[in-house]
Image (cartoon, rainbow over all chains, first blue to last red; front, top):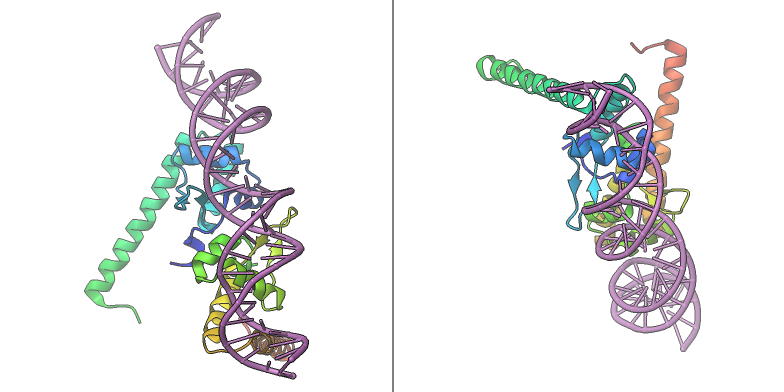
Length: 99
Length: 99
DNA sequence: AAATTATGTCAGATTTTCTAACATAAAGAG
DNA sequence: CTCTTTATGTTAGAAAATCTGACATAATTT
């Protein structure tokens, strides 16, 4: 896994990086917008990509978009990325285009 | 600054990523091998590149190399990288080779 | 023999994080 | 226009993480 997706950042640092309050960060998790990992003892760990998503969320929220809508959008773009991969995989499998 | 160099990882997580004890991690700082940042309240923050360096240190230590030697080596390779950049900068300035 | 290196461990203080609850303004739904 | 939900703040107490400083010690170096 890349540095971008490794879950190593604790919530206080995410707060500094995003400007979002701890409350907000936890709430967006509750609403299914982000999925931090937990250490064995229960403390949350975020990745840089989580931070990026949170910044997007902050923008959307400023525009007045509700978390429910934001979640749908996020899932849509996530699905988009999966589809991309699948297509690329298909292409590679059939035509061995890479490398 | 890239994700690789951003100081966002706390010492407990560094311990998990490297297998080094907290004591060791702090000691290597004391010996000038790594330079975590500090939050206003004093807790240490490391980057992924710090983690990489710590893994190198762990290898060297297993070979019995002392921290003093390791530090010199690290500074040497750091200097090497600076030189590289300078040279590349020179080249670019004079010949505009990029892009 | 004496000093240094590299760790472990302990103790107490401080900081960070967690959950759960209560409060509330603003927005949405019927 | 009431009722509910959304999105946040705040508070409180507990638990987890981190900090410094000290003492101990085996292994090396000097």
